[in-house]
Length: 152
Picture 1: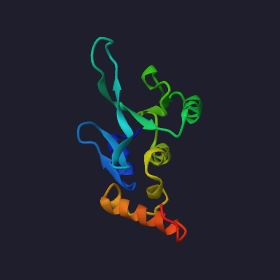
Picture 2: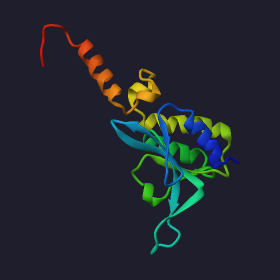
Picture 3: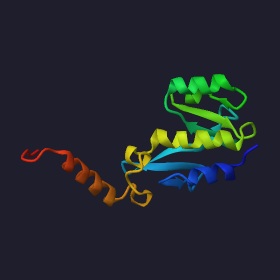
Picture 4: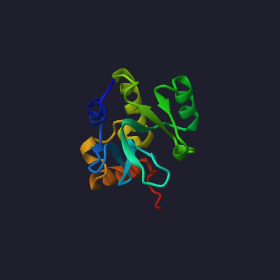
């Protein structure tokens, strides 16, 4: 059985990751916007009341709906979904059923789903993600690719 501390350790080792301040969750900045890739599942216990956090289950991004279906079908005791996530590329993960090895695969994959391409490829240092320096570097990279003598 893994804990939220295991999830935190793996997620925070990835470049550009921020931990949520209001609920357990992790995001990475992409185009100056925080994109969540792991968050605590908000369970609907009573249909007429607000959802409540279920600390034993996490929601994690996956690449697409086909991957979501494959992961859930491969091991429905570890992974599941609910109607709230229909049409959304995320799986629900039972922390009591997965092990650290599962997380070491799932967490980086969830991060790759939302992280900016240049961060995933290692072109930008994590400290510069979401900053003015990243924008400047991106513009410089684009202008370097443009043929000389042409203007926009």
